[in-house]
Image (cartoon, rainbow, N blue to C red; front, side, top):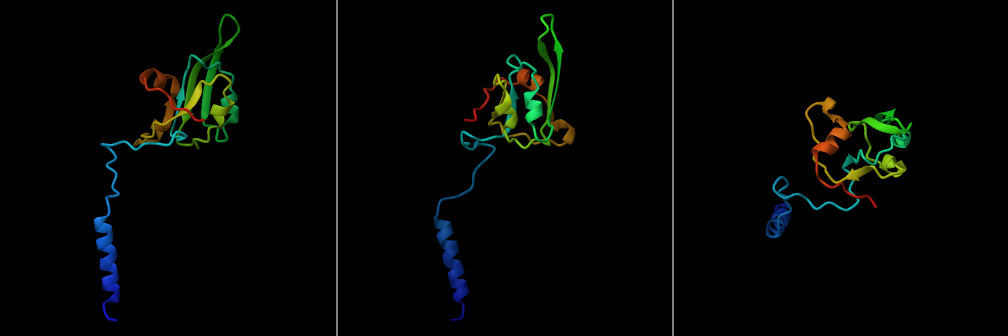
Length: 137
């Protein structure tokens, strides 16, 4: 029959028109993320013992930390940088951390204009943000 495709197409269009909208108004309404979402890294510097296990566990050599010894001959964290442009967010570094200082969070708005901005100083970021870190169970 002539016009069968046209009628079928109009039927689909009318059916979709009567269904509720699928549009999410993202900037105004943040999406509800699953509890195991991996989007960003958070460091609690006071918990870090600068053991370097996270550096060894990282498959992409994303983490760069430096430490110095204090008067009691214990390592203290001096700098902690992550190149998030190379990070897979696999979570191996967080699993290897014996003190739980490094965690994955649900902060997902990490877009930048320049690649150099993806090298994060996690000590400085922890001082700037007061948001609680997310948990990966």
